[in-house]
Image (cartoon, rainbow, N blue to C red; front, side, top):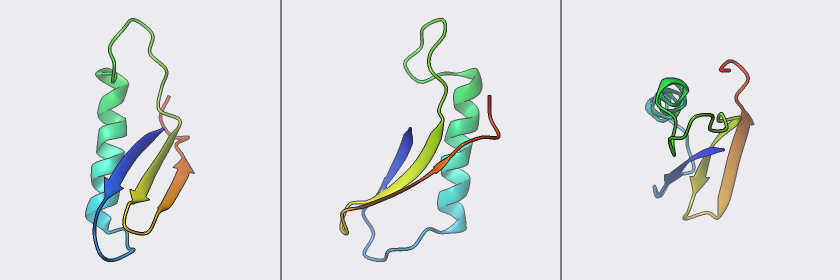
Length: 64
């Protein structure tokens, strides 16, 4: 799972936040986090709102 930690005072996901998170996941397809020959693909993405102690996540099904 790829998690973006947000430390904002508002419990809100902006369009820019989504674009950044999906961009990281897309780049990971060609440049995997952790390297290696066959790393595990990212299967879920999410946002952790640290001020609220809340984690929201979703399956990532459009990428291999």
